[in-house]
Amino acid sequence: MPIIPSLYHPPLLFKNGHFSTIYSGLFRKVSGVKQQRERIVLTDGDFLDLDWSYSKSQTNKVAIIVHGLEGNAQRAYVLGSAKLFNLSNYDCCSINLRGCSGETNTLFRSYHSGATEDLNAVISHILENKNYDELYLKGFSLGGNLVLKYLGERPTKVPSQIKSAVAISVPCNLKNSQEQFLKTNNILYAKRFKKHLKEKLVEKLEIFPDLISTKEIQNIKTLKDFDDTYTSKAHGFKNALDYYKNCSSLQFLPNIKIPTLLINAKNDSFLGVDCYPYLEAKNSLSLYFEIPNFGGHVGFFGKENITYSEKRGLNFFNEVY
Image 1 (tube, rainbow, N blue to C red):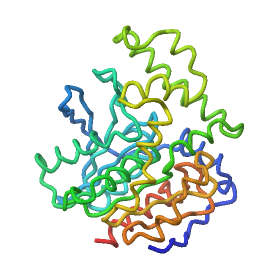
Image 2 (cartoon, rainbow, N blue to C red):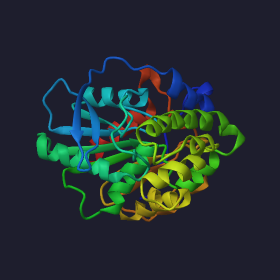
Image 3 (cartoon, helix red, strand yellow):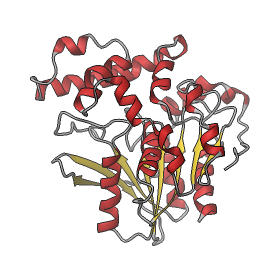
Image 4 (spheres, one colour):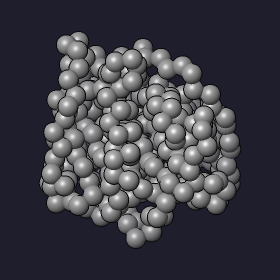
């Protein structure tokens, strides 16, 4: 599909990518979403917590929302999407990835950018146990990479009930994105992510002292170190680079067969040049790629506390099917 021209024109202050990113991540609040938690047990004995919110009217449509790195179903960008979907006659299933629901997961492994088996487990659970004819996928950042990888790695096995997908601020090339966190302009973000990830690793140490050591945790200085020390080893990869290579969604984009919208802002400091799949979108019949000049990382400020990406995602779902 041709590249989609963007209509996003934020107020002057929100043309700054860092301001948009920080406002969305730390200061935006969304109220009025009533969630009900459901726990599902996975085939490996671990669990996922799903936070459901519902349309006021009975509907046969459900939007499945996947958060980003160290997020959860209570983050403003998830709640904002769920609220708008609920008001528009969609039920919502907001996934808390392993270890992200406020309770440590039971296994040494956790979530990561390529763990599509967990997304598949949620989809299978909904199809087998809920009464929905239409499923829609929306992922943010790491969650967006999961959605895109899921759709592209199994193009002939995607359930027919999945009608379309939206992915926001996606590090399509994980190595290229990780390289951005080594740059000065991203130091504060990298430190914040690293702090939260290392705190969770300390919890793992208490449960699995034979699989990780205090020294190994102390030696983690960058996010790549974290992926070398934990992510790769806990999930069957040789090292961080092997993890990035196998789990980047970029390589799977040409295989996507259902209508899918990707929105990556030009001023997203988390994304390097290889995270903008112009060629893949131009050669695809199903991938729609929009590159607003502004928006930062999962920013996209909008009036009445509804972001541009929330409105855009809803319109895409309504228009393509």
